Image 1 (cartoon, rainbow, N blue to C red):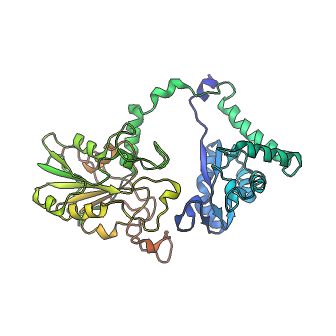
Image 2: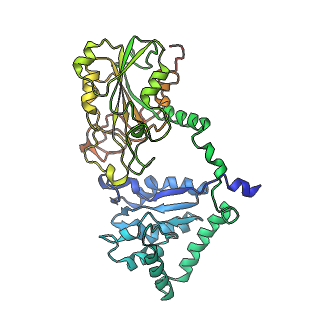
Amino acid sequence: MLLKLHRKKVAACAKHFVGDGGTTKGINENNTVISRHGLLSIHMPAYYNSIIKGVASVMVSYSSWNGEKMHANHNLVTDFLKNTLRFRGFVISDMEGIDRITSPPHANYSYSIYAGVTAGIDMVMVPFNYTEFIDGLTTQVKKNIIPMSRIDDAVKRILRVKFVMGLFENPLADNSLANQIGNQKHRNLAREAVRKSLVLLKNGENADEPLLPLPKKAKKILVAGSHADNLGYQCGGWTIEWQGLSGNNLTKGTTILSAIKNTVDKDTEVVYKENPSLEYVKSNNFSYAIVAVGETPYAETNGDSMNLTISGKGADTINNVCGGVKCVTVIISGRPVVIQPYVDVIEALVAAWLPGSEGHGVTDVLFGDYGFSGKLPRTWFKTVDQLPMNVGDSHYDPLYPFGFGLKTKPHKAN
């Protein structure tokens, strides 16, 4: 019975250790400049929770802390993570992470092997030339450059996880569970996660005249924007493919447009136009409009941005649509983006982050089947010139502060 249970569990990995989210200007693989107190109080707490809950592995970050590469940081990987926090799983490198200890990468591979392994990395991710790593490590162990005790520690940790997982009894994945992927129960949970994570930033010019929830019964409504009918954009990067994709033929799911059509009254006419002109909007007598715009998908370095703007013609779409009819604008993005120039023309504003496959989670709250309850997990800036900006800074002057989020009450009979 115990072994059967193991086959329905996975070994989790906490990443990227540590300070990955605090790099200068948010640039991927960059340097996090912060005191030890700041590192432990801001960036480390999630690891405390993960270790207490029994996480099996921790992945080291490409980034540096005060100029020292995390992949070579013995103090934090061995002394703190393994010895102070008593982490009993194994530490894994990021892909070609030890190569990047040197600049340029792979410039002195024997040194990189030594620095990474002696820092406390137990498993090294080498996607291509693994024989070079194996030969280099073997040579250094034979010459006592890397002590056998370090190898024993790594092997013990990896075997411990494999024993706990039951991998020696059942080394292969249980294919009988494959038909559970994407089942309705899971989609319902994902939909719930969407509606609870959406943050309502603005709802009408004043509290007495809210736009949301929207009426399901209306003569004719407009849906606009590059992200209204694009499942790939809803999902973002690191999904079906590394950098994400555009389009609706990638995975099963519901776009925001489809969800709107499925939610409004059967007699409500839904018109979709990605980037209509102001004249078109004004001349068509729409009851209201829903605009979905935001960022196109990215992952890692491709997401580095110094301007954090909405993609494509998103700004034009907001100005044209919201300039001609009452509108709610839904921002699809992996982070806060520049929206201050458009807030005055927008009637209601929603931060939807990356809602993934379940577009119905967006319409659940737009049309009042459920109330808005989400709060900002980070400060929303006015301009990028303010960044970095965090609660407690002397220059803290956000567009929307950390923890902000308007609430609405569900009203089922609309």
